[in-house]
Image (cartoon, rainbow over all chains, first blue to last red; front, side, top):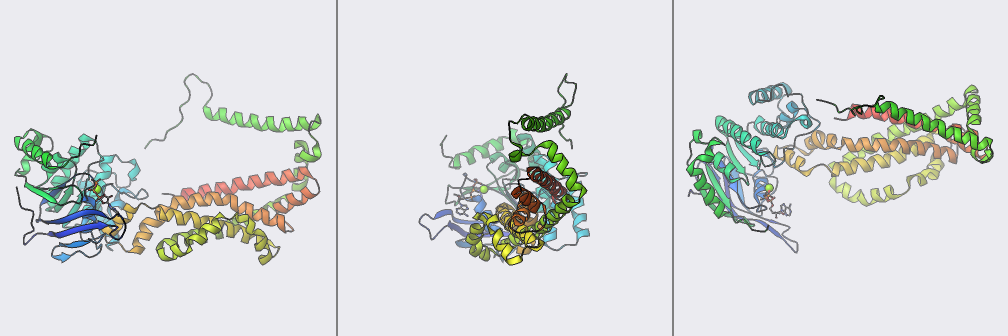
Length: 265
Length: 261
Ligand SMILES: Nc1ncnc2c1ncn2[C@@H]1O[C@H](COP(=O)(O)OP(=O)(O)OP(=O)(O)O)[C@@H](O)[C@H]1O
Ligand SMILES: [Mg+2]
């Protein structure tokens, strides 16, 4: 078991984050209990937790979209106060703009930052060609497969080169094969670029494949239940062959038993 | 990209389109033929229904003396100008309300109330304000289409996926950037559907305006012919209106192609 608490030098530190929705109403929703953790530089930290435990809420707080009821988050030593584009946030759905081409979807974040058109087109071009979508620059999202759309959404997140990237169940809508493919690709890109990533997922296998550490959350209101350090080298992290690794099964069973899966079915 | 084309039925000799077209022609001929026969056989009184051959004759007369063309142009002009003014300002106002959510909250019940009103009921009032010239018909068409466009643009802007707005905010976008890059384009299909509705409303506005008080236009022609029991002339006017509606609708189709993403 690893250590959740933040240490000096962490790129992102959540300390005592709690969230209550509709606090003043008759039935307040306590989404997050008391969450503290640190994200190390160039680390992939996976968060797994039961459905509805507050994972997306945590991301919204980190991205500055909502203000926590208690506690705070800091990124690169700066307190998060409002949405300022300090992290790259890839939402649960791909959220591509149907009226824009692939290229113009990728440049969205750059436009918002006022990067010149020529420069953003060049950045987007490089991303698109180096990640296997060359030739689709002018295609509309509606003509792309689910996997391609998700790639475009990921490139849009990478385009403005954020240090910290939040991925909210990025592959959950994809079929199994495509999911494994993208896990491998995204993992490679993240490591190449040394990004620090928080990955929310329901898929324990995905978490083991991609993450350096895995945070297991409790049911709502979510708190950190435990943290696992995944001792696998990069070469052992192939999404397919990892499944034959005895360590994989060990982690899997451990985490599965820790998740408070309600037997409602 | 491939475009789905209805495949020709295996074994059938004619394409489905041709069949559809033939059906439409047959229906038209059958309808007018039956009508003509019903009048000639005196199953229906001609003074209540008119008669296709008489309508054709009337059409020739009204074309020859130029009055049909002139009336069509007048009504077309009124509807078109009213349509453009109403749709433009209505859509802009509806979108702008997104930028001022407080004002939108204040105005909402009023907008809903005005929208609930049968808008054509405003026509007499507008005629009083704007007189009996073409300005008042333009005003009727403009005000009605304004309300419809305002409503569609406003509700469209409210319907924009909140996750898109979250995405923009997470990128650090300002309210203005979110409006320009997301809200306005995402609302476009709604605005276009408003335009489509408004083709009908603009014509209704102009024609009802002419019914109430006018010296020219198709509405005036129809209304005046009606008071004289000249049913054939009424029909000529109505068919001209139908044609006008088709033309305006086609113009919107072109506009739609240009505006849509
Ligand atoms: N704006 C809000 N107002 C009230 N309740 C909310 C709001 N947003 C989220 N919630 C509630 O907070 C809880 C946590 O929601 P959240 O979306 O963060 O969960 P999640 O872990 O991401 O779920 P999932 O696994 O389904 O994606 C849920 O019970 C949800 O209904
Ligand atoms: Mg979620």
